[in-house]
Amino acid sequence: MCGIVGYIGPRDATPILLDGLKRLEYRGYDSAGLAVINARNEIEIRRDAGKLSNLRQRVAEAPTNGHIGIGHTRWATHGPPTAYNAHPHRAQDGRIVVVQNGIVENFLPLRQELMAQGYAFASDTDTEVIVQLIHREFTQTEDLEEAVRRALRLLQGPSAVVVLSAYEPDRLIAARLGNAGAVVVGYGEGEMFLASDIPAILEHTRRMAFLENQEMVVVTREGARYSTLDGELIPHKEIITIPWDSVSAAKGPYRHFMQKEIFDQPNALTDTIRGRIDFVTGEVALPAANLTPQVLQRIERVTIVACGTSYYAGLMGKFYIERLARLPVEVDYGSEYRYREPIIDERTLFIAITQSGETVDTLAAMEEARRHHAFLLSIVNAVGSQAARVADGVIYMQAGPEIGVASTKAFTASVVDQLLLAMYLAQQRGLMDPAASLELAHELALLPQKLGHVLAMDEDIRKLGIAYANYQDFLYLGRGLQYPIALEGALKLKEISYIHAEGYPAGEMKHGPIALIDETMPTVAIAPRDHVYEKMVSQVEQVKARRGRVIAVVNPEDHVIAGKADDLIVVPEASPWLLPILTVVPLQLFAYHIAVWRGADVDQPRNLAKSVTVE
Ligand code: AGP
Image (cartoon, rainbow, N blue to C red; front, top):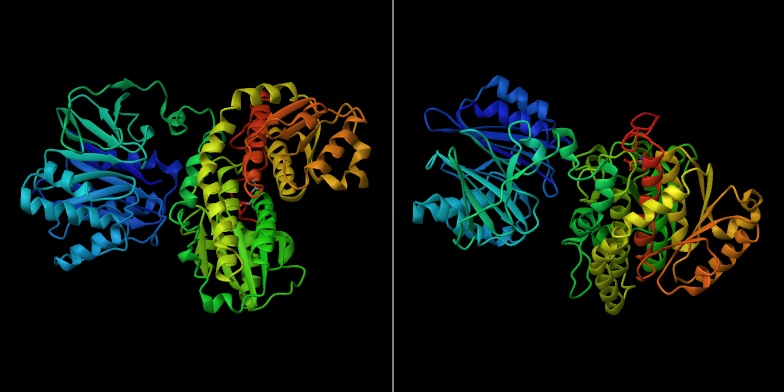
């Protein structure tokens, strides 16, 4: 989820690039940079790790002046967020620079090929391969557009690329390969813009065109010429007028970041799975976790520590790791862990789950684990965050920045990451047969598509939410793998709509909560067809017997509960391991629509913060 901006026109490019990068700030970043061609036809680059303010400081110390340039903010997924890894990356002659959003999946063989041809590399990134390839092709074609075309055809994986060159200083060239995110072409008066998202350039123009997959564009001050990557001219490209203001544009067509992030989950889960499981063998690879055979041979138990939604994700991890890898797992709150003198040592795999990577209670628990020589593994979304830096190994959620205070895509991504981890541990411990691995790999491959079917129910769930929006208390019930989902569903409702909601293991109902049930307290019963389905049927009957209303989350063709519940949310069939991902999303939407209907501040609920960095 990197940010890209480009400009060519009569104005000074640098402030336009910096402002554009600022408007992409919601995408999050851990390094930023820009390149401008100056009056002496030299490319000047300024870049730095950290916040955009660091780049502004570099530019203030050494101003750049020119009328054509490109800028980039990096949401690193591979390689540390350092200055030398920040984009733009330059060819070794310094006369071609590139910024990229996406992944060059075959960058290693390409890098080796280029090194064998005498190219030296100055970064760890895959992006640098692109600019050296373009340089190599340019030395043969002496035509920048053709050189870019030839180079990009060698790439595998999704990429959005923008090229600036002192060889042809009157143009920018951009291309889009696969689903690497948008390439937006902005039409100004005597000036043109490029961006990875609308907000970056919306203050300058509302007239925009969008590159499709496998398309290129050459942009000059006068306009833009489109073609396919194969060189076929695209004579007409639709230019649309964007109706949004710049703030709302960051959300795209969504009203809130939370809504955008709920609907981003098919992409986020695709990204968190990508490259981590072989869909032919079912084998899982988590190189950045550093769980080497030497480490694993000493691991006898697992401790998972997190807060809030991440803690509920950890409860899922307990099921996965105990069932698949046969390692005992305890799960604890970050705020409790360090105060109970936990039993932990070098035989413990200590897993911190944290979207922000900055939650102080989770970080403090990590320090406690460190003191006792446990192996620290972080499952974290924010690259370069504290939890990522202090751990011995990392599994990045790769869900893209999560802006809404209520966590959604980070929850589902961290659940999938823990399933991958459990599979990895089981495979390394020789406890998982290839057939079982392959079946789960197949299920994971189908997951984003099934999520799409769930998201397609949004309007029905909105209506259901409005029908229940005036109740003041809810009970959420689930068993087994659906118990953490009951907890998470209740948290979503209470934290954004301010309605009291409790998640409970369904079997516990008769030990207390059932006293609460009456017609004023609806129950959400999560009852897909898994190994405890029959138990859930009787739970629903118990609630109905006390005049409680029941919203049941079920699978298709469920005629048993359908005849008892007042309302149904039907989610697709799936492996019991993955059903929780399908059952949690309707509960996210249910909470979202109730909160919107009640006029709550969905993205910034009262009293809450996106990252709790204080005790
Ligand atoms: C979840 O919707 C809440 N915003 C909150 O519980 C959050 O999950 C918790 O603060 C942990 O945050 P982290 O994942 O960034 O550590």
